Length: 99
Image (tube, rainbow, N blue to C red; front, side):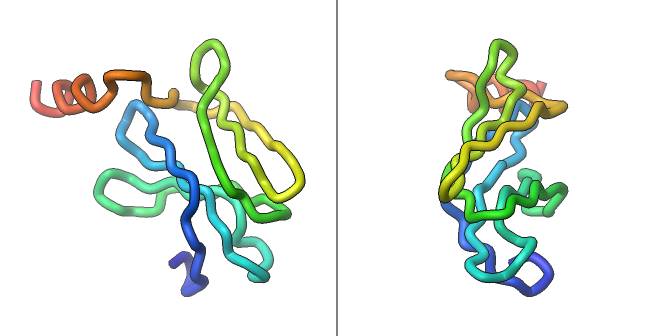
């Protein structure tokens, strides 16, 4: 729920800080489809609004800092200030949190 609008999650990716980037299907609620970003504690910290329903997301590019968003009829991308989690990410993330 964002602003009391049901935004159904679909694709989910994590970044190196443990935040979840979630594609959002808000149906006919204008301005709520796109991507939401959530902290590990479940707090909404960001939104990327798209003009159509977003079905999936993934990080890519040479530095894994480009977010690709697959929508109903289009593919969108944006450079981010973070990186997508790499293989072996859970172990390295938790080691940083405790060490």
